[in-house]
Image 1 (cartoon, rainbow, N blue to C red):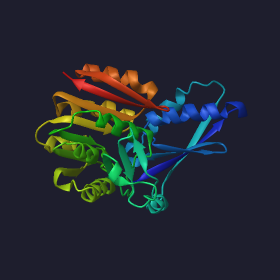
Image 2: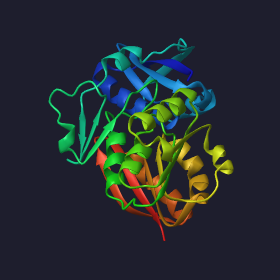
Image 3: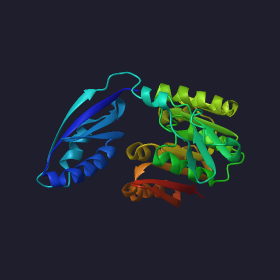
Length: 289
């Protein structure tokens, strides 16, 4: 997956710099930026090259709500390398979700007895999002475990490591289909399906929502942990693959984005039946009657 790094320089009084950073990261997140790191003069933001639009970014900055603050930026291509390599080598400590599920990397198990957990998921992450360390993933796993999944077909949009489809299968789903625009992620999802023993029932496809045109049948559960703009654009495609009485679980957006997503869902015949929040991040559970 190829990324741009954008170095934002914020010209603001010292007492306003932190607030300006917070607002900038929220607005840039709406423009497709995924992660940020603070600098002395502002922020660095990372965005997939395929999702980057200078026009959208300029429009976002033009609407910046603070008067008397100037923001400039430079864009550069991130070196095409395994920039998560150190994290992958170090792994992550086990993560517990809803007192029922433990997500682990197969290495940091000194204080964990896997036999005591109703649901144990091993994730070997390679350049893919979705280990349970992020608030959105934890909320999606928690919301997914509250559904009755026995015999369901599950669609995971932007599958990353495949964690959500794997959780669904271990909770009784009969089939999970995931897709991702990143070849690393699709491969990693297949790998994680194997190490969790669900690979006969898991399919990972390479591409965006257009791959759904080649997928037969409908799904009782659709999962999407992606940024807000992609969710808004792809919700109609999700609905075309959703069965009557089916559920759509969404995350990857901020709590302030919930009204916009609810409005879009309502236009498509979906009703919000649950909402979760962890920090600034939110998760919606939608239902089709």
